[in-house]
Image (tube, rainbow, N blue to C red):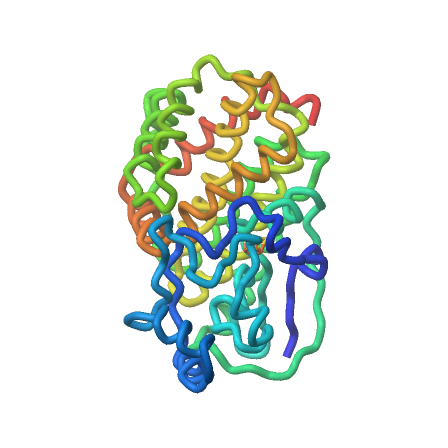
Amino acid sequence: MIYRTPEYCRDFRCIAGECRDSCCKGWEIDIDEAAAERYRAVKGAFGERLRNSIKDGCFVLTEDERCPFLNKDGLCDIYTELGKESLCHICSEHPRYFEWFGTVKEGGTGLCCEASAQLILSRPFALCEEEVPFEEAAGEYDAELFDMLYEAREAMLQAVNDEDTPFADSLCSVLDIAEKAQSFIDMPVQREEAAADSDRAMQEIFRCFSELEPIDGNWIPYINECAGKLRGAPPAEREHIPYLRRIAAYFLFRYVMKSVYDGNVLGYAVFSVLSVIFTGQLFRCGAVERGKCGFAECADIAKNYSKETEYCEENMEKLLRLFETEPFFSVSTLKCIIRDTFVENADDI
Ligand code: SF4
C-alpha cells in the first residue's frame, strides 16, 4: 500500500529529556492489552513496580500528573529497563497519527509535541510517498467521494502553500473549496449572516475556546488574558505568515480526508482555518509584551493550541458541533475576520 506523509516527518526525533512539555505528563495513558500482558510477565523488582503502577488499564499518575516511569532526567524507565519494544502502543506511536483509506495510508507527527511543532513550523509543507506492506485498519468508504475529497484537499493545500497569493486570499480559497465540496456531498450550504463586526466575532470565538475542557490548567487564564490584549495588539507580522501557512497545511492534510467517513468536509476545513486564525491572534498577543513573537514562541503556542483542541476528543466534538450552529463560526464571518486580520499585509506577502 502507499504511505503518504509530510516530508518533515522523516526527520522527527523525540528530544526526550530536553523536552520542556513532555507528553509523559498531564495525560492519562491507556495500556493496550498486549502490553499489559507483557508487563504481567516481567519478573523481579521492576515487574513488581510495573504492576503496582497500573490501575484500571492506565498508569497511575503521580500527584503532579507525571507518568510514574518518567524519571527525573525526563527519560522513560520502561524504555531504559526493558527496551523500546516494551512500550505500550500509545507510548511507542505518540506523537505519530495515522489514517487508512483502503490501499492508502496517511500519517504524520502531531503538532501537540514540542519537537514536532518545531519541525512543522520550520519547513514548507511537502508530501512524500512510499510503498509499505498492506494494513487493513479502516471501514468501508466511497471511492468516488475519496477522489473528489482528495482533489479538493490538493487544491486547499496548493492555496495555502502558494506564497505569491496574499495569505487572506489563500485562507478564503480554502473555505470556498470546502463549501463547494460540501455541496457535492449534501444540500448546498446555507450561508449565514456575517456577525456585526469581526472584533466582536473574535471575542466570541475566544469565549468559546475558554469554555472548552482544559488539558493544562494554565491554558484558559492564558487565552482570557490574550482576549483582553487583542485590541491593542500589533497587526499580524509578516514573518508569522509562513508559520501560519504551515499550520494550515498540517490541519488540512490531517483532517480533510476524514470526511470520507463522515461527510463533514466543511467542518474540518473550518477547523483548519479557525486554527490558523486563532494561533495567528495568539502570535499577535505574544508580541504585545515583548514587541516580537519569535519562532520558538510561535511553535510553543501552536503546540499548546493543538493539545487543547485536536488532542481532546470532547473538545473536537464540541467545536465541530458549534461550527454548525454559531454565526461567529460561519464562513462569511470567518472571511471577515481573515480580511481584517491579514489583509494589511496583503501587499507584502
Ligand atoms: S512531547 Fe514529543 S519531544 Fe516531548 S517527550 Fe513527547 S514525543 Fe518526545
